[in-house]
Length: 166
Image 1 (cartoon, rainbow, N blue to C red):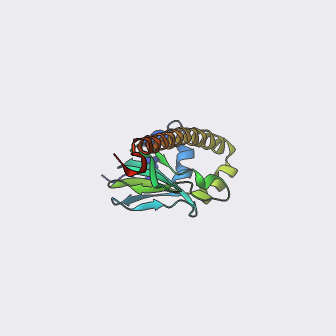
Image 2: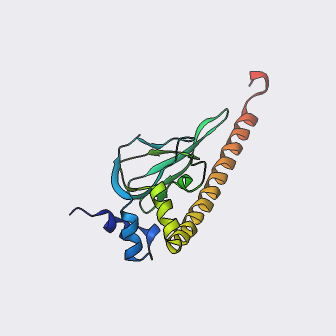
Image 3: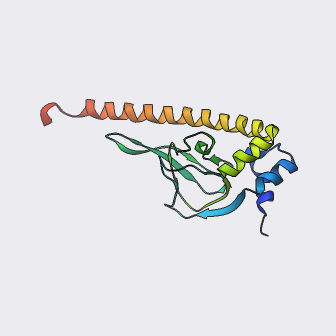
């Protein structure tokens, strides 16, 4: 059986507790989407104009570290929300999101949802509260991953023989 966008939103953990009226209004800005393994959902620095509620599959969030290249900071799966950069000017992605396997999600239009939040302050407050939790969690994961990357680099430098002599 095919689920409507409303039904998918209603069953997503990120939106638990929102009223049917709020979910119905949100569903007007959403659509279901699929990403195949290796597909980019968004690229760091690109225009952020939407977010996704993951229903199936996994998305890797990565960032570029100067001198080290791309580093995966977190992998998110079913029940996750992907993307918060659409909330804040200048609306640019802070990470790159890549499908690790087949991803099923509902995409929601950022500018439309911002308009909806302005028109419905109760919904706006609730979404902002939830997204603030997401941002805090991403910051914790990113910090931990970058510290681990730095420690790993320091250990490999210490393990190298002096002047290439072993």
